[in-house]
Length: 55
Length: 215
Image (cartoon, one colour):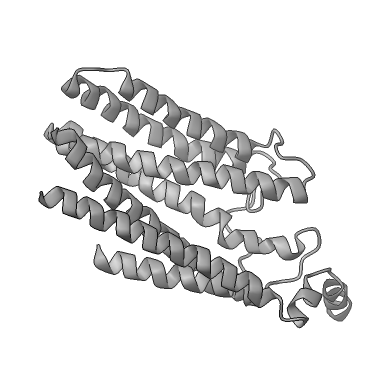
């Protein structure tokens, strides 16, 4: 019974083809790029405000 | 504050990578969208955390009458509501592909929408009062009540009735995911990472508020 249940679950459609082609890494790289740009932007804004405060 | 920023960068980098690459349970209907758990749910956790800080600072203003705390309270509420709006929008996109519609009259959805509307009311109330000390008093009292309304609206009422939303309708907390340690490995860092991001943005905004308020 448990085996049958597991087999049913294995049939659930996932993005397996995208993964096997290795193209999922493209998504990860793009995601990380956006995230890095956001962090740098936020950091630079903070630095500017700090300079403004010290004036 | 420096450690919070470093933690934020590390944890969110981990979330972005592991959240997409790691194995997730294969569930019907949800399919690959189960990964939304790593990005949609932390939005609400961050909102609740920031609004809690907001109401704590509002309470501190009421008890000390120091205007500094009112400004902190306003600032946290502002950033918190941004995360709440992101939570609603991400939830709507997910709902469209899972339930077939952007919005249903589900208690969880309506509760969170009402909760956000209460906070929109807070900003309108706040900006409509000219006198600084009166503004601080009225909005602090409102803020404390707004947060105590939010908890039943989001956490209690949806659990009393039936709800489509995962983890509701009589189910306590994370029943659906409870057994799954695969999800937890990414979910907890994601929550902490997004909370750190919220604190970081709030810190930057607070510095700016202090400068503009002096002039």
